[in-house]
Image (cartoon, rainbow, N blue to C red; front, side):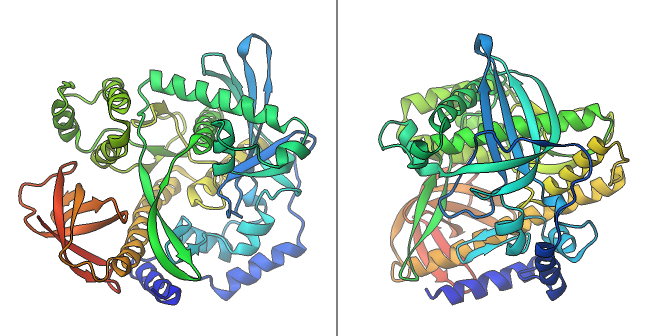
Amino acid sequence: MNPIDLHRIAVEAMRSRGLLPSFAPQALQEAEAARRTAPERNGDIRDLRHLTWFSIDNDDTQDLDQLSVAEALPAGTARLLVAVADVDAMVRPGGAVDGHAGVNTTSVYTAAGVFPMLPEALSTDLTSLHEGQERLALVVDMLVQADGTVSSSDVYRAAVFNRAKLAYDGVSAWLDGVAPPPPQLATVPGLQDQLRLHDTLAGRLRQRRQQRGALNVRTVSARPVFEDGRLVDLRADEKNRAKDLIADLMIAANGATARFLAQKGFPSLRRLLQAPRRWDRIVALAAGYGVQLSAAPDALALDRFLSARRAQDPAGFADLSLKVVKMLGSGEYAAAPAGGASLGHFGLAVNDYAHSTAPNRRFPDLVTQRLLKAALAGEAPPYSAEALTAIARHCTVQEDNASKVERQVLKAAAAFLLHGRIGESFDAIVTGALAKGTFVRIGRPLLEGRVVRGFEGLDVGDSLRVRLVALDAAQGFIDFERA
């Protein structure tokens, strides 16, 4: 498939779902003008440029949102610092860039390319925590106990300096002992010790959450593979040790951020998943393996079941994880009033959880950053509880729209790959059973499609054989029938 065709499909899909595929000229001019304007440095800004800050992200990522550094302390404790890019210092509330971000609320990652939430003059340059660059940041400073408990935390502004941009795959392979160390470990003093300490802290944080019921799932997503500009495959983009490491640190930082705002008496935006959407189906799924779960949602019992299945059938665990994740349902954003009750996240087993660590890519994180800076400056909250409620509702809707666009473009790419294979059969898992249709995912190539015949009685999590009956790359349709 011509990449230009994929891009056109992506643009049309975004427009049809109320997303802006391009920036208005005023927003681009505003972003370029930021090059000539020094970011504001009012208030207390600590100088932490001397620390061994580093980032871990995808090889080709240029919009770096966070850095981290850690310090081992006596009795197995450690100090963990996560620095988040101060995007608010460059994005004026109410401006054209802020307006675009407020409409889309997220960067959209498609098989045709990325449609960034912020102009690239900002997200991949001025507000990115690039290696070898001094940047302003908000730092989440946490004390982690030997058992993985975050016993205290603070938030403050600082100047930071990224000493090494590392990649997930290289770090993960080195930590697993199957590849040589990333080259930066030889040139940045103390970086190897930092990675080892980070790996240890992430394991402790993860174990502590799992003791509270955090779900130990491992899903895969499809990654388009191009050769000489042509799409040749959709391959599984699996988690690895370094991705888990960063996820564990960000979960801890997001929790500390939410608690900080609550302690300051501020309203906030929270990310939550309060109850599984289809717990009855999860119970039935476990029963098929001879495990009885209670009628009421029980995260600890579910995680015990998942851990046992992972040990017994490692090869099939990704498919089982997909079934459970689909039955859990999607997370959403909600406004938490000052002094209100905690809003929990069932899958992560955390309370008081606020997205805050990716302000280049997610609008809720930028809103949270503005709340944090106001709290630090002793100012009134820049958003009312009512405004946060409206933002939360809009962000939830747009996140869903962005996911639908990503799936549609992926299906268009997949339809191209399946050209000429009408009539072939595939192993599949039901990923959706709604009034609008029943959907399944096949493994090779990794993609989703709709069951148009023989879907009666199917439900989320069922395994079956399907036969490919029709394709439409332009519309992103991939139709199967029950084989």
